[in-house]
Length: 114
Image (cartoon, rainbow, N blue to C red; front, side, top):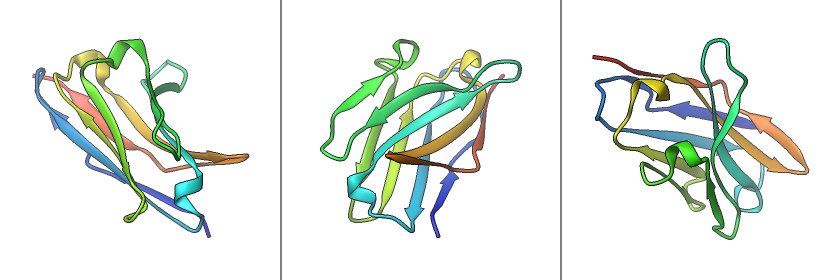
């Protein structure tokens, strides 16, 4: 049974940092491209960052230089380090695994507010 469990969300002040984690199980993690997406109220879900099984990385323009995606294949976990957070980063953040078929996590709320 495939499971993606996100953690690490919460409330942070503008300029602060958070580290999201997504623990995966039920599939061969190292084969899969892992990505983080986010969805703010009234908006469509959008790609934030992506890392392939061999480590190729892409970022949305809005987070370049502030967010860092990484993966630990030994721990079946993908991370999103988010620095210099701004109110516009407020959203539910979702983990996604793709290799032909795709799987979504349940999401974790990130709120950036003073």
